[in-house]
Image 1 (tube, rainbow, N blue to C red):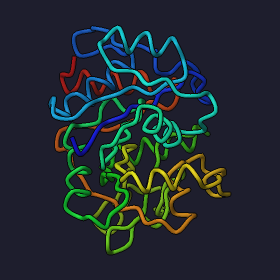
Image 2 (cartoon, one colour):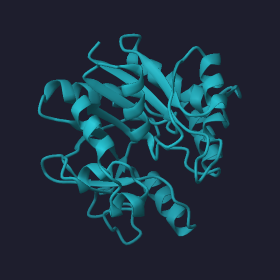
Image 3 (tube, rainbow, N blue to C red):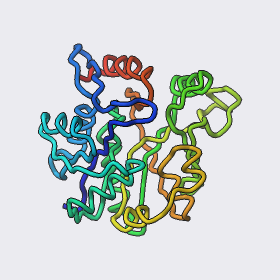
Length: 267
């Protein structure tokens, strides 16, 4: 296999402790843990063709992953973010796949084609060391983003890219500045960064050797370490007609995501 999917999950989340074990009701009311829903999303993307692992430092998460039949890689409690945890998991498990996908465990609404788009991007461009998807927001999503910031909540991430599709910056603020508007000159100029990453082994190994930089520390965004060290990130624009993408970052996101699960008919 030239690729694998790893879901990093930790219990001690700063903003939402125990988040991977929080249960979310689907369209019919069936409740599943966040880590189970993340594994379901990963399996849908892999279609049984590439392996899926959960990487964690917590026995409670490991037990839940084992309950649903997921392969678990135990990592240390010193990992500061998901990318560090994925890098450690690759090293500890001796994974040799050229492409490593980091499907973060707080995005159960991730459509499978977001993941396959990243894998295909790296397969088609051998010089690309890392890729991540971005989704042009609709007006509803921009309103939700702006509402989070107005309420003082740290929520989803936005990204701006250059004309070659390389990321210029990622932020927890809504960028570019729109003066509170969802539509500017007839278009929605805001791109929601989808928290999925595909790396080549060399890029992941390099990341593990770098120290946290000031931008990564200020924003709390692990991918900024690549940009701060001059490593380009390819942004792959994806679309999901009729679907809604939102991560579970705060307790207030639970009802929002459950509403989206109901709207889309996802169990």
